Length: 239
Ligand SMILES: [Zn+2]
Ligand SMILES: [Zn+2]
Image 1 (cartoon, protein in one colour):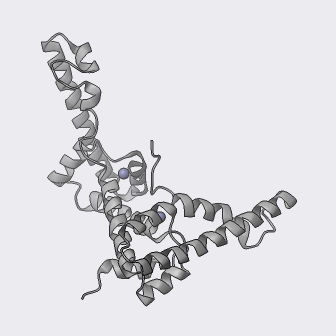
Image 2 (tube, protein in one colour):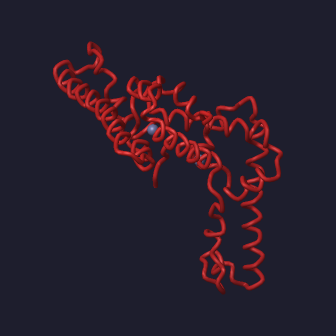
Image 3 (cartoon, helix red, strand yellow):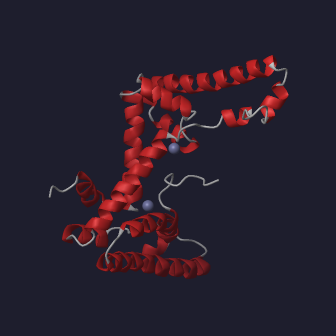
């Protein structure tokens, strides 16, 4: 059987700091934003999706600002999404004027029509979120299938471990007991180390009122956040 590309991605990225699925997911988001601005900025389907999604979500829209060299692409895509929103408002206004019921239309419940606020809701997910979700599932599935592969097993043991949300995702894909045991064995070893470092951090900090002269426990609060909540920007605000 041919080894999937995602297997090689895992081997290459497991040694990097942080959860490998967070890191590969973020790489996928960067690639997606890059492709939107470089290749698909004038693509009809992309424009339709961008209009339907009302742009990107807050997190990914702001990531566009990292692509200053292709800010023209941002201008073109956002002009399309604002144009869509203005059309919806215009349509609502003209329908409301015809029935002399704009106020009701905006509030909703006029002859089965939804209110303007519903009309303005995104009709499609943020395309970068979609790319991120697909990447998370691809890598979680590949990791679950290859855990007992010696190269993956060794690289995973040497890695920072997974964040909690991605551990949960991998657990959903793991099918045999040996893999579950291996996964939990490695992951709990990582968390035990972080917990011990956090304990030491707390004791040292109490004593010195500073982290300056600490050893490996110095960055344990950062590792605590990373291992429970994932890398910055992967999971959004959840509200
Ligand atoms: Zn993660
Ligand atoms: Zn998004």
